[in-house]
Image (cartoon, rainbow, N blue to C red; front, top):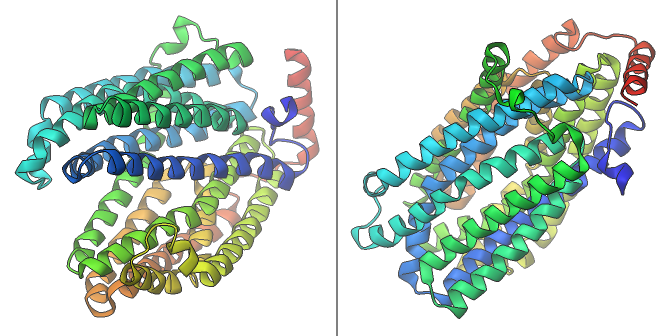
Amino acid sequence: MQRLLKNDMRKGNIVKSMLIYTIPLIIANIFQLLYSTIDTAIIGQFTDTLSVDSVGAATPIINVVSFLIIGLCNGAAILMSEFYGAKDKDTLKQEIGLCFTIFSIFTVVASLIIIIFSKQLLVVTNVHDFLIDGAREYLIVSMIGVIFVTIYTIIFTALRSIGDSISPLLILIISCVINIGLDLWFIAGLNLGIFGAALATIIAQALTMVVAIIYVLIRNDIFRLKLSDFIIRKTLFIRTIKYALASAMQQVVLYIGKALVQTEVNKLSFEQQAGYAFGTKIDDFALEPSKCIGQAVAVFIAQNRGAKQGRRAKKGYLYGLIMQWTMALTISIIVLTLRTQLVKLFTKDEDNMMYAAMYLGVMGFIYLMPGTTNGLQSYFRGIGNLLIVFLSTSFQIIFRVIAAFIFISKYNVRGCAFSTFTGWVFMIAFELPILIYFWKKNIKIPLDDDKPNEDVIAIAETKEA
């Protein structure tokens, strides 16, 4: 177990190293999706429809903040991986400390703004008058806990950046179990309704933060920071903000694009809308492995780039693409074969099932596309060129939204899949020529000899010992 926690991607078998990283990450993300489904089910089972709708009305605003935090941390993750690969422990500690400082400030400011203007924000997002009070209560309580999310997300990001994706998984499982238990207690037992749902979440988030802090302080010396590590250093700050903002804006653009597509979906019949909603739930699970493999490849490239092992970085990228395509084909076969049975896990309504199966009948043929796009983006993430990632995502969203306005009214739920396919096609068309150019010119991944660089790592490790 200790060897798995210290998964050094700079040496050893490439595929094994990436699998050790990827599998816990997939389990963690799927576990979160399952938790979200269970959480919604508990609220729906033990409260009234008004409460469920109030939570749903507040969720988009909470999601924007969550996506921004995740985006900021994903950007910083590349720098952390690079510093770890270069065995630059001092700068790595400064980067972690800097993230705690600036991301916490951002979270507190954003939370205060949302709390103060909560009613106005709900009005702007067209929330019905009869839902505003409940949605505002849930939103305010939830925003109090966002700082806890920021802190443990930074810790999880740092752990994953040094190759440890198992520890975040174990802590996350504990958090989800606690949250579900508190949900049942507060909502079903104490009948606290919306307030109970939000309170259960922030208590679980606070406990997750505490467990994460205690764990890393005991198990990993890179988290034993000095006060000087929290100082904002200009050069490191500028570089971190450059990476973090590009990553955060990518998340926001993606979210806005999905919201625009949803406006067209909302013009369909209720049964078609429900079918699309249930189909995208299957999508969420189907696309997670591709995202996780992409994250593993990006960390692999960043670590080996930091260690100046260009050949190993490129070899890992090619193996990563093969993993992406293999996983995508496997998922396509599963979804196409079992799509009706999968939809039955979420609904028993025959019309909803029919439209969800229609949607998945198209999506099942094109899961190779996100496997390819995530594969291409992992290269640019790994070399730290997050501007290309942002631009390619923006390109994808623009054409997906345009296609949605053309196809959805004509082909209903199948049109949703056609518009997604269109976005992915244009995304690949944008990224692929740039990747080929970078690859041929060895931009940011110079082909240094592997053996001398591995010797450098060995010497550094001997000095540390």
